[in-house]
Length: 241
Length: 175
Image (cartoon, rainbow over the protein chains, first blue to last red):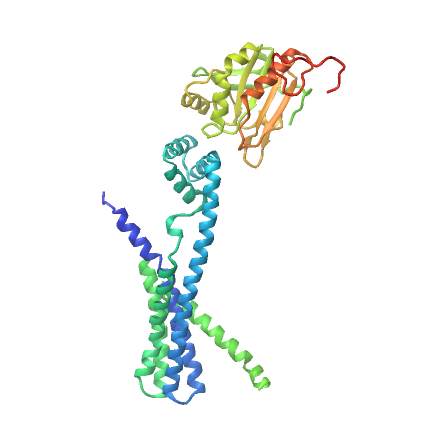
């Protein structure tokens, strides 16, 4: 039987827990910057001004996304922590309730009542083991449920930057008003597909290309709908002006 | 839930006693009183405190001519293993797998699919003379149940918190 190093697996799971921030950040960075480039290309004639504005937007977006991820994770951690503390206080006051609750959960997962009872009795000899198992089984709370605010913020910010660079680079490197924007859009599409493919690879999926296409389709659909809404409301702006 | 004065529904079910399975019925019990207590499940964490609590007080209940019968929806094989797990139980554990008896006594919890933690004391005529139930998460008091049995056995007017040695209330006096 192949041996599994629990510590190594745990570290892997902790690293993978950042996938949400990476995918979200890259996708948002790519699309936001591509949107800014598209919008400014039509409105601003000077290439350098478009690049500067996109760079400013990228910096602001990365900071905003990083701060948002930090604050969001921190709030989530605090709320979950407070709830968990309440559960622990209640469990200390009413251990039978925890034992019965855990027993019910084990039975729901297929153990016979007798086997579940013996397991809970064994766990009850070590209160810490009983508490952590009950928290995981009864409330779905584990150590991994608590994110790391600072790490999430940094990962999100860097992911946004990495995503934003993709449409910016061709725009800066390819001369000519027609090719620079086209290059940016092609790079955007390829990156979105790549992120989906990467997520599929992490999930050990056989149909990674499908994961990539789905990601691309959803992200581009969102962008297209946003563009259409912009078109629809643009007459209002003209009227107001 | 049945109340004092109601006739006690009879039963003809299997029970586990002394490591054996046997068929039994209410009619076969000849003691003065029957203490019929329902509990939710074998192999649980509140019920054993009650089951063993009644077992520890078995002699005191026997001295009051009272037969104890425990009932749950578990099958009789489970009762056997449960009694063994608890170190042996000296009174029968009645198997009510379909909850029919619990329903007849009005103590079946349809949501949880178990019997409530209910206690009935039946007199010689097998009428209910005492009925009480506790929430599923609160165990009942063996001492209080024994006090009730003793009070019932006196046939006297027993004031609040009466226990052996305390004066009975005189007939006709309001409490």
